[in-house]
Length: 217
Image (tube, rainbow, N blue to C red; front, side, top):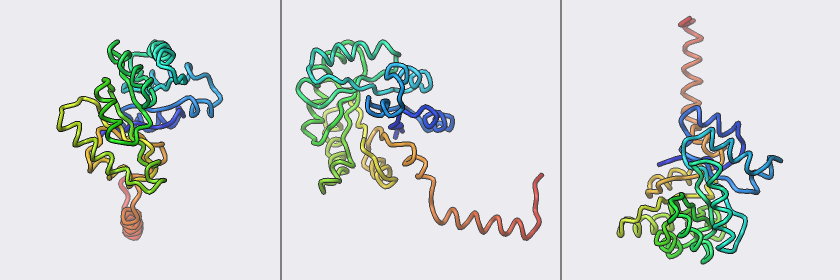
């Protein structure tokens, strides 16, 4: 499973990228706005930092405006994936941009039917929102599983990009059900290393080493 980082924080992306944990980045205008910097400038810096797809989101809701914004965004770098919403206008923009040869990430997916439409429109990525479904007492993993089955049944190339990942359990479950990609904030990715038995084992090891007076250097 590919790991995308859901942030606009350059330092956080760089830290994970140095460890080989970054296959791409997802961001949006509101995330970049929090940094207080120019959207184009930050997006370009992220694209220069990572080799994989960087999702840059349009702000328009009309198809023609989304297409125009998307064509402007892809001028930033070759690894831009234009992020559009899962609406009819968004699907029109997806079809036009994908026909142009650009990567498109169709976001705000909450049903298998929506995912099927996005694949038919040529989406590179479909982004089901796991956490937001959990918020309304719907199991987001069921949606990932349904999309996986449908895409496998018909050979769609669209990659399932599990979004709204909030916990390390979400990551595990997405990997088990067959998501192609998951995108999560840096703190969730870093929390995947944690386990109390690892901590306990390390403490015991250090105590033994200290008691024995063992030193390598």
